[in-house]
Every structure is written in structure tokens, then in C-alpha cells.
Length: 507
Image 1 (cartoon, rainbow, N blue to C red):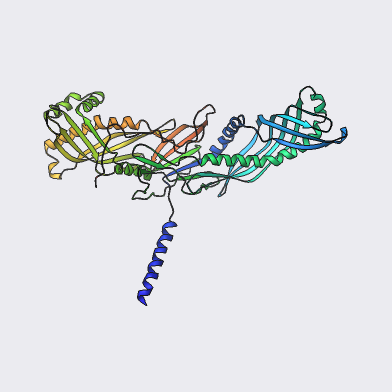
Image 2 (cartoon, rainbow, N blue to C red):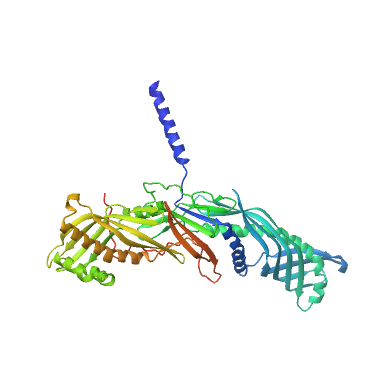
């Protein structure tokens, strides 16, 4: 009996494990917060965006048939085609968060001028020409719901749509415009009725068209020759009375594998601030996954020749003579020489208030190749380089730079006071400071492009290091003439590690 019960118990145990693992909360690597200030600006920028969009679009044709009893005409079939909005005004428009639901849109007292081609047909005559349609007292309300699909793309839905124009005035142009304008008024009411019935379907179709574009965003994209980054949504937005939070996965993967790193993101909360339009929290997990993925992919290695080292010393060191004379004393410059540096473990990321550090455990090997001989190792040893990371926001990019804080050879404590060891440690520290880090910083100056909405630029940006994450505060500016395209990532041009950078993962 006990033997029969064992498979059942194991089955229950496995099902419980599957349930608990599937129900675990997935914490984000990046959080983006939209505040009420952003919504207020979106009213202005959104109207400019809509104005740019509608200049390139025609509205659906409007068809109908009406009787003109005062002219004793049984029917007049009409068709309005090539309908274009030339100008509009929505002076009373607002956007507001609906906690736990979405964003409410409300506008009233709107007006718009529309030009169109027309054609009419009746038992007595038929004709065609141009016309202008003026709509006034336009009212619209609806709630925009933001969700996600199975691939982590954002999806928009329009809920509780109601749209109505209260007044319409048609003005015909052409040789017989006086005649047509005389019976335009009886046609305005049915035209207005038909048009009001089209407004919400038109708006809904535009939202669906936007979703098609959103579904093409590359939420997983190649960063460089070593890694991919995943910016997919990990859950629905969190909406309160004052802000909307988007939770992005924010994790790096080696190019050949989408296996999550062997550590999990830690929950973090953005501070309750409302002074900026957008707040972006970039967690320590994001940077740790970048470090781990590049290490696994073999990206953290560099080989420098004597010529390259000398070049960077000359460019970056005023104390060149003393350092090179010390190196010469140990015969490094007496023959062709190469320096190989590679990480032995993933660089360790640490974010504390006001302090972003990167500790790099690595090995250094000095090689020489005498004439007509193979490579020979002069010396090889391990070290830890502690660097501080400088940060800046430049345009749409997060710019990082490294500076050496401390260099320490991995030696027994009994050897640390040896004058030769101290001297050699100083030499290697100078090589890192003046030779290796300038190369790394040159590549880092390309920066990390930040996700940015269509034709919106970051302005008044600030960045600070808090415990466990970076906080980027920024306002937005709409650039109608910009050639920017929507980008959920904007990282595809980054090539952070290239050229002579090679490496291996140490078991």
C-alpha cells in the first residue's frame, strides 16, 4: 500500500512545484513612471502629433440619400470623398489617470474644418465639385486601457468611447454653388447624424492600427556581438491617481542563449516624486545581467601591444617618463611585448546612494616574443580592479565612464610589503589607468540609447544613484520635424566591445 502511494505523493509534489513556480511574482529590471505632468504635456504634444498624422490621411467616404421636399425632389444621393481635416481646435482637453483602469480622455467645445470632394445624383440632375464642412461643439470621452500580449508588447484598448459633433455647416464651391448652398441646410442634419455614427469606429480603428505598429517593436534585440537585451513588459501597468508604472523585464542574455542569469531581480520602488514628466528606474539586476552575459559570451578580454600601451600613456599621462623607465627596468620595452587582461569572474556591480562601483576580478599576463621565437610569458597573476562609474544623460543616451579607484594584486598577505611587489603593483595600476580604461571609456562614450516614444526627446534630464537602482528624471519635448521612429529599446547601434576585445569564461 505504501509503495502504491509513493507515485501519487511524488505527482502531488511536482504539481505543487509547478504551481508555486508559475505563481511567483516576476520583478522588473527596469521601471518607467509616467506622471500627471507627462499627461498634461501629452495634451499639447498629442494634438501636434494628431495634426501631423491627419495631414497624411483621408477619412472614410460619407454616403447617403435625402429627399428635398421643398424642391419636390424625391431623392438626392450624395457622396463625400477624399475627406481631409485641414484644421481643428480642442481647447478643453484633459487626460487623467483612472486608478487600476487606464487613462481617461475628455474633450469638449472642439471645432474642425474639413475639405472634401462631393458628387450628387437625383432624377433631375447630377453634378460634382468641392465643399468645406465645418463641425463645432465636438465632444469626446473614452478610457485608454494599456495591457500586454503574450510576447510582452504593449497593447492599447479604447473603452467607453462616446463622440459627437453638435453642429455642422456645409459650404459648396463651384459654378452652381449658390444653388447648392440654398439646400445645404436640410442636408446638414443627416450628414451630422451619419458622421457621428462613424466617429467612434474611426477612433477605434486608429487605436487598432497603432497596436499593429506596437506589435512590431523589437522587445528583444541584439546589443553587440555578444549579447541581447529583453525590454518586454512583465505585467500590466500599475495605475494610481497620480502616475502609471510600466514594468520591463530589463535583462541581458548571451547572444546564443535566452537562459535567465543565475540570480533574480530584487523588487524596488521608485520614490514618490512628481516634478518630472518621466522617471526611469534602472535596477542593479539590469547591470548585473549585462556583466554576467558579456562574461559568459567571452567579451571581457583585451590584448595590447607595446605600441598601443605607449600611445595611451603619451595621450593620458604627464608622468610618462617615470612610469616607462620603471617598466624598462623589468625589460618590457627591450623587446616586442604584449599585455593580455581578461576577467576571471563577472564584474561585480554595486549601487549605493551616490556611488556606482564596478569591481573587476581579472588576470593579467605579460608576454614577449623574441625574434625567431614563440611567445613567452614574463609574468602572470590575478588582481582586482575597483572602478567608479560616472554617469550622464546626453540626448537620448545614458553615458558611462570608468575611473580606477583601487588596484590590488591577489597575493598572500606576507608578500604585500615586498618592495618589488609594491613597485610592480604600481606599474600595473598605471597601465590600467592610462592604457586600458581609456580604451574602455572610448567605447562607453557611445552610450546606452534609452527607450524613447515617437518623436519625443528627453530634456531637463537628471540621474542619481540610489540603493539598488539608478533613477533617471526627465521631461519630454515633441519634435515634429524629427526623423525618429518609435523604439522600445533603441540599442541596436551599440557596439560596446569590438576591435581587439576577446576573452573567455573561466570555469
